[in-house]
Length: 181
Length: 178
Image (cartoon, rainbow over all chains, first blue to last red):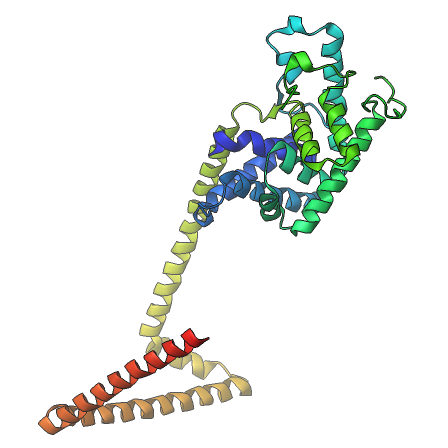
């Protein structure tokens, strides 16, 4: 159970709390709680969404206790090379394309990290972890309408962040790019 | 999808077909379904992360430590409970030897004495109840040792069973109606 789900659980918690050591502690706590509560698991439900619910509650409890402030995303426990760097046929990519890819990954990471916590979690659950709307409702305990509203706002906020970072499509009035890009 | 955004050869951030720009354009046009697909592809470009090596071992170690600590906590509590139980039993068994001297030496305030009186009264009432129960047992013995008594008891039981069955059927029917 742990080996199969450690990556998605850790990934979600890391992007929520933005502290690798704290994310690891919370991940351990989540798996321990899941182990204790295994008897209550409903096989009709997807296991991933069940364990995400436990991870979500664990993160919320932790944040309430510690009232974590905005923390820049440090180097995670182990960061794998991004999809750009992992390409086997690197000769297809021109050097500037590789650099641009890294820029996008960097700007995307920063944009996600800057999302409001409530939006960030829903955006990650929906578009990174692939949960359905109903599963997100079960994980977070929010009403369906609230989930959809927050997802809409989260997407808008993310879009604004990326536009401000200079990723607007051609033809759009591109905002001033961020420094250092 | 056409021009899979995950294909490296398509990745040209400043060209029109880049996934981030396709997503932003779809958002601008309000094409929700398309925008969601592009956003899913875009978030796949986030740097992959995973916990440090040995994570599952650390979880298992923690579970094992908690199990050991839980067993250690249980043993003293069980021992304490056993000692209290034995002590109470001994004290009750030896009560005639220690209770009377203690009561004579200790001057109790008024309210414990009243409480004791109330408890004694309750005890006396309980004894009377038990005596009445014993009396009814004699009556039962009388009934059960005579053929007429047995017939009467059997008839009462039969009537009771039929009544219960009838009542059960009534309740089932009324719940179906609901």
